[in-house]
Length: 545
RNA sequence: GCCCCCAUAGCUCAGGGGAUAGAGCAAAGGUUUCCUAAACCUUGUGUCGCAGGUUCGAAUCCUGCUGGGGGCGCCA
Image (tube, rainbow, N blue to C red; front, side, top):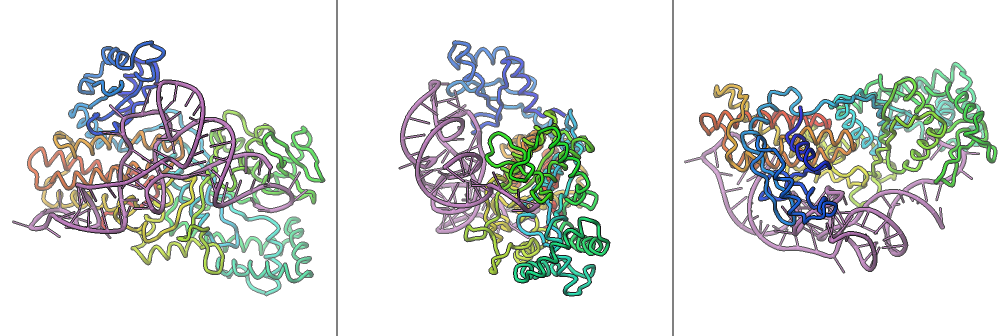
């Protein structure tokens, strides 16, 4: 279904031959949409912008969509949609099972790498962001029709497991009986032990070798640690209400068998060279090389990331690979992508994107830490929010706070602010939805029946709301393309604001005849769009508050 | 030393070539015999970090600075 603005845009393009960059009008008096295309064409056409605008308008056939276009200011062309066209578009949107969301003409296979907690550690604020943002992008990309493959690249391998397993054996604990917080405490004791006891440290190192060589006892304990951790992760995912399941697991350890061959290939074809004992790939723009094999023969995460790219391209058929990882990894990913291209693992046709997000800060503006100086766990964060609001509202508040700012920026975790139902918050959107639900519920109780047709858009508040509703599909498309969830947040916030004004100024149940029927239909569409939009954000659209 | 990100109202943030730079919060006042007042309305607020440049036009693009954050060979 082509949206009204894109329809209009196509018509203008037909006359101008360049993208009109049709935008929502900046002021109500400028109509519904505006284009500056005449200003941009003025130079090459050798005419004044207003003359160009006049010529464009003369050739433009949009009478079936708009009132006669107006030329204003330095040469803007302003469009006002005919209200019956707008009403018809909303009626269609109500009948559309997708509520105006488009289906992409070019479905892609999109791999999204997100969450990625570490075994034997609880999830903390950084994982919250990755998980919430990744979940949203997953929903949006799948929503517009792409084939999404979620990959939870958990940290289930590395030298720390030698220390962990050795500590478990030292203490004589039953690994399978641990909870995740207990495993984390054990991790901390093991680390301290490792630093203070040279004999223990040596045993831990030997234990790493045992793990790598497949020693049965070591592997068993390692697997138990993973199981304990997964139970903790899954509990957190359930609490967060995200889509991730065990099917999406993509542990680092699953690449172990791929690494020697992959790295040998790089060395054989000259992509990687030995430098200071390590096998390195040098790429332009980086002074330091990417080390694919350490001097001691071991593999680091760079090698694993290359292997992951290969699997995602070769085995999964990815057209696009998205990494939702914090911004401190920006250099790393840029380098990995360059190396993967150089090594021929990543064809030009496959896009890789690092969706980099900023840190979560405490009220003091510094990285969010506990009094003890450790990272705040995800569960602590949710607990704190639930002290201020009921669980589904608290969760909405946290997710929305995480998604509503530009991802690139750090943001301050201010629970009190984000649970407010006033202002640009998750609960405000939920409230708007709950109000609509209530109106429709009462309408049903009073026997007004289900309305399917918008016929009357007399009031400015009705028109403003209708206009916003028609933009939904384009907004979702934009998020699918640019991977910026805050655009969807801003849209839903605007929509909720327009709805609040409509609600104040346009009585629904107290209206009569076709006005009531039309407004009930408006309520139904708005509720659906809000619910759909909130669901895309991973936020529950509550029926009551 | 090199690289990346950030700087917009008192605070939190949108806006990323185009009309008089916008929201929310905070402050003050107002609106409920009326569908959820968890809401809405009104009122005030700006050296868009600084300096150059490109352009008919710059908060937006380029260069240089300042300030803050982050990263930079064998951790992930």
